[in-house]
Length: 390
Image (cartoon, rainbow, N blue to C red; front, side):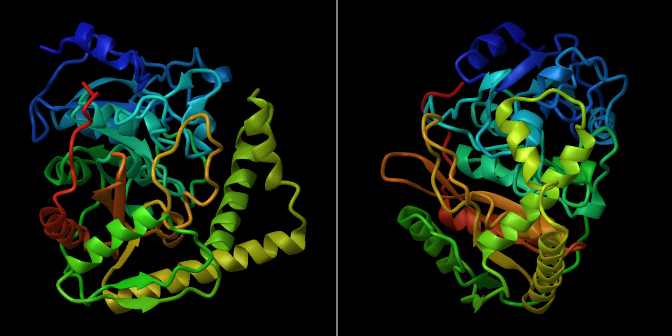
């Protein structure tokens, strides 16, 4: 029996869920007894499918997205729809139409985005797992900021049917959970999963155009120290900030075309102008940067087995502060390369805010990537529930 009255009360200070499905029930299968929330840009039959957009506030999904259908078939109860950044463009989850989502570790702080409701709901214990979407890091950024675990599948290994898209060349639906075992159980249900080994000692990027907060650097150093052997330091041809900007331009172009004629906030409308107004020569340069980065990241993973990186270069921040532009500088690489990636808790700031680290590995070696994440997680023991959460 799911106590929706208790869930409504616990959700009220967080605004993680925008809608609950009080008719939700459990089935039979490998996820029987598990409660799951779903980001509002993923279709859940009979529930609002608003994608954080006021223009879609009354739109109801006619049927489940493929990923949601797989979860139901596996016995999970889909208990509601989760708040998010407007249109899934941004990493703060301060939605002008549905209100801000709050970080369970500190009310008034951002949970990250764009899957902020997914991260907050999982961290607060409102559901055992949640689906988010990850275009440039939008599953892993909330996982880091909310102190939980997040998985972005390889782009080609998970269905996009039933997803309100941002950029289908980068989008991937992925789960968040409070432990790696639950995360892997959900990931195996919704996405292709391989058990090839990770060949190599791993690599970490030389910080190239990214200003990393000292406490993030400290947590990352602890994760590096937990590896079986020191990783090789490598560099990409372009600064990560330039790579992230090229990715943003592509997303802006795709979303502007997809949302043509749809009313949005002034903030989102402005973001959607960047891609279309890019001149042909600059857009050609952006595409070349993305293609080169994709090839380089894939080659690095093939050579070294995996990449290990900070998830986000900054700790969680207040909703009253501007969104740090570099939040996706590290996470965007897995999307551009189409590779699977796991974010897990790695440490804490002096004032009690969570910090995450991510692994990026080859498609087909998801099982081994999870095994390495478990090894590091057991060493770091950095997960802790929010003191003010549900």
